[in-house]
Image (cartoon, rainbow, N blue to C red; front, top):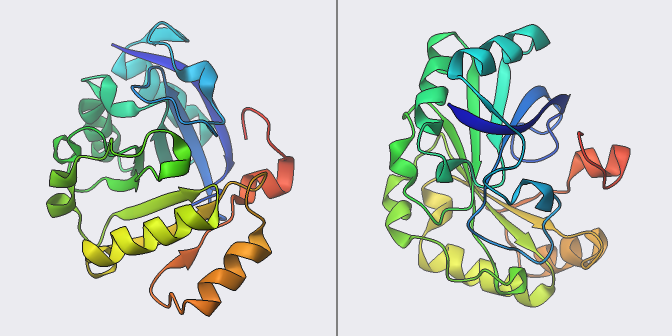
Length: 214
């Protein structure tokens, strides 16, 4: 069993898959409290409802999508998340998991597209990342830094360089739009010639605004 907050189908708003239609499975529970979080309703482990893996897979199947993202909260706080991913993969789905990197990502099946959100100082959760996870990253994965300021951007640039992240996987800088204007971050990235790092706006928020279920 897993506790699920919500299902919804939308345009994939972030990552290298931005623009694709995707079904999202938002699981309950998170071990961090980022100051800019857009889904605090998923913090509690008793949020949502308990569902069997079979029920979750059937609900996903009813959407007609082949791309599925498991998100949260933090999906890996629920120990059966890797098993759910395996069942979805066995059924022919393309599976993405968005994780904050504070837990072991190697528990996920290797076919899963892992999006690892490394927390910057402006998040209030900096230092939560398990650096052992770096060795598990591969070309099927992505690292994302959510930036609340240009200080965050400089920190993320330095972290990426020190850990040679762009040699392992795609790296994206995503601004918190209410704190860091797109133009300001884009200009800074051009000035600093970050040629191996992507600028990643939150497409779904540009379309629908900051609301739930998109």
